[in-house]
Image (cartoon, rainbow, N blue to C red; front, side):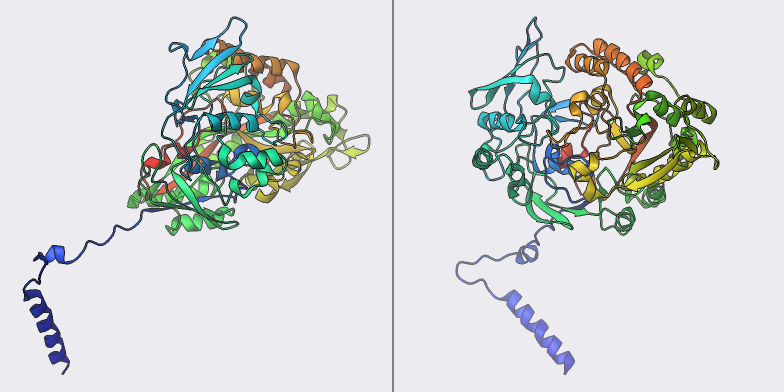
Length: 570
C-alpha cells in the first residue's frame, strides 16, 4: 500500500510536468521551474569589552574599550586616518593644502583653511549633510557647557563661515600642523536638523538625548536597528552609504566584559572579531591562533601601538605627598624589574618602554639621546627614597614620621597581572601597595576615574602629539570641565606646555622632531608617568576578509580598525 501511494504521487508529478502550457504561460526548463533561493545574509558577529554610553567618544568620560571602534561603523568624519597613519578625506572632497590655496598661513601664524565637503552625503534618515551641519557641529563641539574632552582643535578655531552649501572656511588663531586632517577625536559631525532644538533648549541634557544611543542617526556605512543595553547592538547595511553599500549585510556587536567568556565565544566560532581594547590576554590567544592557523579559520593580529605606564597622582590629593616629588617617581621606576615583567607578560616579544617612542620609529635615532633610561636598581631606589626621609622600620617596610610608605595602585580589567607584579616589586623596596580594581562601569564615571590618590596603571597611544595632549596642563580634570581631561595625574609643567604647543603648531616635520626631542627631555626628568613596556595588542579575526592591522600612528593617538568596515567581507 505504501508502494502504491509513492508511485501514485510520482505519476501525478510526471503528469503535471508533461501537461501543456495554459493560455498566457511559457514552457520553462527544469532550472527555471524552481526560483533561486535568496542569498543568505552576510552577518558579522563582533564583540567589545563594554556597553558604551554612546558613539561620541569625547563625551564618554574616557575609559574607552572597543566602543570607540563603533564610531566608524555608524558615522563618518571629515578625515579618516588609515592603518599606516595616512589621512584620507571622507566627508571632504580633498585634504586642504597650501599648494591648492585651501590652506593659507599668515606671517603672524594665523591660518585660513577651506574645507570642501563631499556632495551627495546623507544622514541615515535621508537628510543631506551640508555646511550647516559643520557649523552646528563646531558650535556644539567647542561649547564649554558640553562635557567634551576633545576640544583641543576647536579652541584654536576662532571662526567658521559657509561660502555655500558645500564649502566651509575656518579661521585659526595659530598654526596647527594637523588642520588638514580633523578626525574622530577632533571634529564630531552632528545633525543640525535633529539636535539643534534640544541644544538650544538645554545644553545640560543634550548628551542624554536618546539620539546618542538607541535613536542614533549617523553618516556611516551601518544603521543602528536595536540596542539591548548590557547585551548587544544590532546594525544593518546602509544602502545609501556614499562610498558604496557595505559588503556585509548585518553586524551584531556583543558586549563581553569578561575575557574568559570572550575567549570561549571566539573558540566556539560565535564571534568573528574582538575589537580592541580589552578582551582575552595575549598569552591566552596564542594557542587559539595556532589552532586557527592550522585550520585556516583565522589569525591573531599582533600590533604594537601603545605604551603602558603607571601614572602617579601629583595634585594635592596625592598620598603620600612625596608622589609629587620627581625623585620618588624616579625611585619607583627603578624599583620595577621591567625586563622580567615584559618577558613574563609577552614572552620574546616583550620590550621595556623608556618613553612613547618605539625603537622601530624612523626618527628614533634623532631623539634617542634625549631619553633617560632608568635601569632596575633597588639599591638606588631605596637611596632616593632615603633622601626624602623614608627609612626602614622594624618590619623592613619604609616609614616616615611613624607612617608607612603606603599607596594605592589602580588598574583596569586587562591589567591585573601587571598590577600584581608591580605590587611585589615595590614591596621588595619597602613600599606597601594596595591594589584597586576599577570596573568598566566605574570607568564611565568621570569623577570616579580621576579620583585616585596613588598610581594608576594605564596606556596611551605612541607618538609625540598624543603624549603632549595626555599630560597637558589644560587637560587636568576638574569639576569645571566635568572631569573630562586626559591629564588624570595632574602633571603641571610650563616647559611641557610651551614645547607641546610649539610641537602641535609646527608645520615642518624636522622641526616637530626637534621639539619632540625637547619634550622627551622634560619627560625623562619629571616622569609624569613611569613607562613600563610596549603593549602588544592582540586582535582575533576569524571568517573575515579586509581587516587591516594598525602599523602607524595618528596625531591624536588612536587609529581605528573599522575605518574600512564597508570593505570587510565574510
